[in-house]
Length: 353
Length: 99
Length: 167
Image (cartoon, rainbow over all chains, first blue to last red; front, side, top):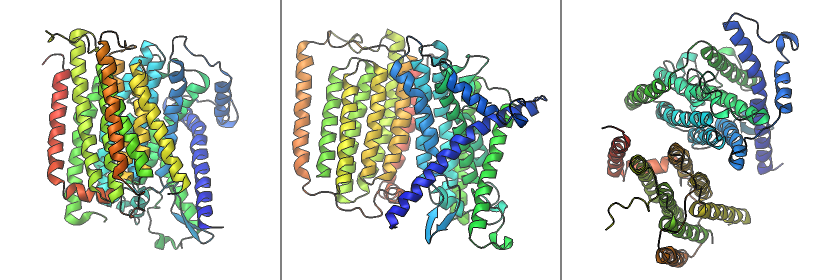
């Protein structure tokens, strides 16, 4: 088949794979969340539905679908309907530029295992993250309820504030790698695992921590989950949502978590790189090596999902003014200092250009 | 043909922005129509940059975007301060300097 | 100039114009703000079709993702309701203003229409990339770049001072 047809087919297959994986990961994440939280709190988690409670997500899904879909009487109908979609779509789209594997060879043609190898790849993720704020703000406002409005506004302010620290910590990696394409950034982290960007290879340890903290704030996870603060605001911006619309917010949160983890892994922890030079393993580029690399990526992302859940059930929640203080007076100067430090590093020749 | 579509769209967007500034009564709505005008100008910059294959037009757009951000921030701060004073953002009500 | 790109231009033009009309016309400021956000994204689409990828992404990040969120935030904070229309402004202003604006628009359209005679030439591979814009920005436009960072600091300080309740 012609080159264009092949590219189109490859792109279609990759899109289906990525979307399916992301959407399928959400039920798995709910199970992990409930079991790990139970482990941390010294109790059993769901263990009635299926062996080890593995069918619990299925039961949850059925419950979501069967629940009554209400709409508050004074709610702005169009926006109320649109808000969950505006939360979910940017979350799914942000994953598009993240490479989940190396450049593989299929029937003689090279196919990079990333849905869209854009020139300004990281900017695209930032753009999608910025658009994700709309879903929350619109949900808060269109529900016509004071709890929702407060939750929505708080969340918008929080997300916009931490977007700055997020972008600046990314720029450190971009400075060192000289490119905005995540595929190229991963390829430059080949070698031993201490040569990854977060460790001795790029000395971006501070940037990595800033990115993680900002990632927690961007995805509205504890300790930054004031917008959905269960004890304070009922359920924040999604108070008035039920059944499938709530499920979409739920999914958007988990997909955002996965994208954040995947981005952290790609930029700071070598993406799909194994951490051991491939010559030592005696593996030639072929499907064994490539499968191992895809599994390495998945494993690293899974580890970070565990960290997200772990932190959620360990730390208390920030108060809103503490949250804004940390964002503007703590993370932002730290990220700027990291950027200056990285610029000096790049100038002194340690960059991977 | 395509440059003409883009340029015509930007001219119409600019005119719509001017109409909005003249007709709207909320201070924030007027600010939004000003943003519309700025975007129309940006579109013309990019259209010509593409036509002449230069990067200079794009740098101008970069600067205009930055300026628009700064202006939106300061404008909204002014609207907030005015709202605290007069409890309204209707520009027809903010007429203390009228003789 | 394939039929597909022409269709893309026309579709984007329709989206941009319809959303702009909603911005100018609709009385609810939140709906107007959302229409403006949609308009900004369609303009980003224009940039993309014209191969200015870096600026398309910047447009989404800065304009649609930050400025419009800020405007929406202030609208919701002030809890602005439906705007009144018309009555206080005199008839002259309400009629003459838009008439003059439309004349301005027609003038612009006429001037711009004649300024470009051919279609777009195929783009050089360098056009619109981050590298080319960056090279210009930090090369020819280095002083304006530093000046605009000073301006941003001034704007930040100004905005904080203006919005503070108590100095």
